[in-house]
Length: 298
Image (cartoon, rainbow, N blue to C red; front, side):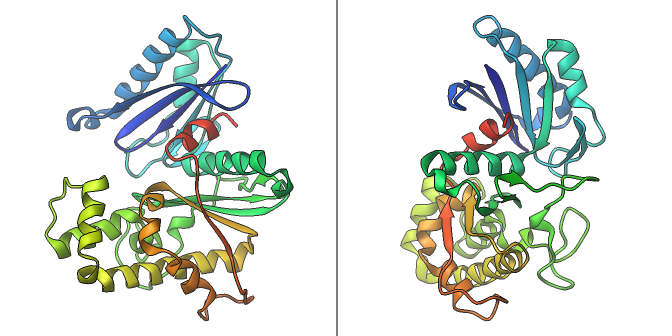
């Protein structure tokens, strides 16, 4: 058995995974505001305590951790939302549990998991080029080429949310201005909708979507601009990678039904693509929150 861990800015998810990459047991913890002030020992203690308990029932051979940031050789080099930098979390946990630990960017993990799931359903897709985007608090992603995840040698790379789509645009937490994720993330979209409709910040999920559904006309211009910005960023990536399939995950998957085919139409029926296409294979991710957990051990 293996343990997959998905580390987020406000929560941590942990799953026991069998040889078929299926999750047998799931655990989750939300971080309190007080815990976020000194998050590193909270994360480490939770993982160590949970795994020690799980070891009483299962023989665990490996642990994978999906991290929302830049990683290399088991070290968290930089995380914007967690504030953890240059820390060898793999070594710390491995020394305590005596189990090998590997680390990878969370979007890359989700990309691997979605690709594996897709091929499991249809083996003919094994050699495709797949562009994966997780669109939530920010935008992350990965690219599968001939069955392998593309990665850089110096860093993991493929920080797809930080391509610049607006010169001198909105400041991003990464230090640049005009990043794709400041225009295409679901977080930024929801912020604009809530401000327009005077919706309290703590209203989310189904209650928020119900309000939006009833008042679509009042936010039509926000929807149109959001789709336009999302299409611009995605078309840039299509021009670079020419993917066979594009998979969109993260929070966007919960809102995609509201936009229908608007995004596909905006990409195909525009002047954004260098190589014109009559259609694109645009899919919604299927694994949801399990993608990071499963992908961390692949």
